[in-house]
Length: 190
Figure 1 (cartoon, rainbow, N blue to C red):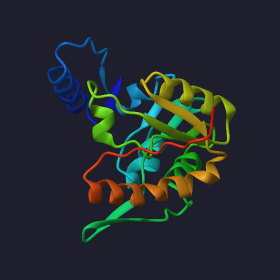
Figure 2: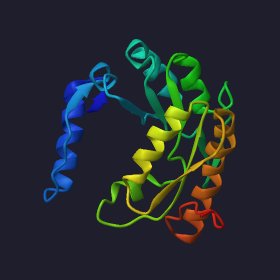
Figure 3: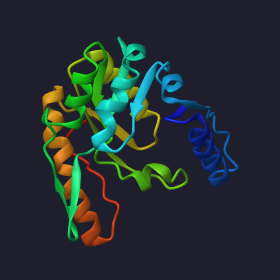
Figure 4: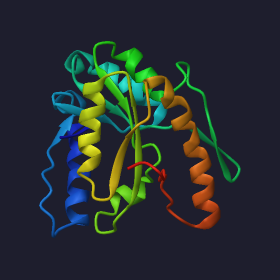
């Protein structure tokens, strides 16, 4: 279920995705945020400064569910991105504070959105997953494994999400400088 404040906007996004990949059978259903929050696993993919408020707006439906936060608190200063420090230290921690009964995981911070959206181009790398909840880590790791060539790695508790999110600014700078779409890959881990 693709959620948005407006079901019509979500329907437009679903249609755009179907047109982009007409040869694929995409099981997309548009809904408003309340409809999307009824899913078993919910991914909060909003701008960073709206993540906690958006999640809180449907918080009643998210109790006991896995909620994946993938936003990075960044700002652009000139030609570079700089990491910001949200009130709780990370966007994911802010989402967890807004949803005290949800099982929040932080993930996908170092995977470029364009690379995730390029379904026909393989992407290879590691996805660092931070959570205080084993169930959230396992559900997020399962989702990561469904994307060919991506490997989930346990990055520790949700407190570790702050440096993981902040490192995205460095990775964006490297990608811009080298005109690349580099992804984090940690060597030496079987």
